[in-house]
Amino acid sequence: MIHLVIADDHPVVREGLKRIIAECPDMIVVGEAVDGDGVLGVLAGAAVDVLLLDVSMPGPGFLETMRRLRSELPDLHILVLSIHSEDQYAVRALRSGADGYLTKDHSPDELAAAVRRVYRGGKYVSESLAERLAMDLRADRVTQPHQHLSEREYQVLCKLGAGKTVAEVSSELGLSPKTVSTYRTRVCSKMGLQSSTELIRYVVENGLVE
Image (tube, rainbow, N blue to C red; front, side, top):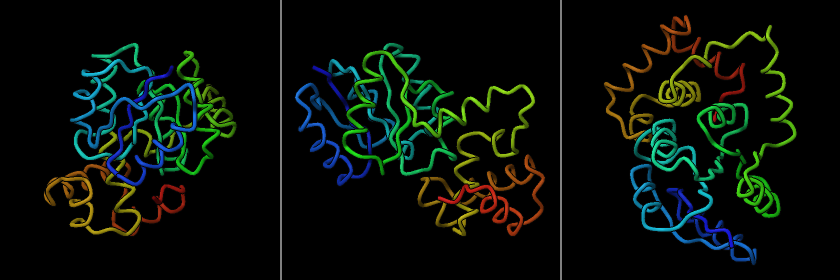
């Protein structure tokens, strides 16, 4: 039996995942978490094989959560689930130690297959992502400016690039408006962007809009 914990801040998503898993005779949900801070607490209280982890939960950033998980529970299998396209977060997730990445628009059968794959110690990625990762191995590949941003800087970039205000980004990420503005300045400096218009254009042209 595969014991799973679901970490997602949306009740509807958690209920949907639980219904899918309930249809799998070899799987059972043994815990739930609604934010990054709660994940470790839930995992400490149960024997868990696979963690289904959302990218965009409240609390510590995704990379910080992954760092803590890999430090304290190195044998845990982690399958990242996200509404974000593979272009946005998949490579970051895998490089941070995730065992697989699956967008939430995949079928229940694909979710079950991904869980079983990572449970057996394998890696799960879609065919298109596998091709992209293979291209990343090319020695002459030129990285894009946004690939050098921290996770939080990248989140701010995508949200501002989608036309959201500093106040809206502040509310969604749980940061103060001043902190969001600081991240914006840092992002523009790192990427050589001179204005909000250039920032939005970059996000749109590179398919980073949420």
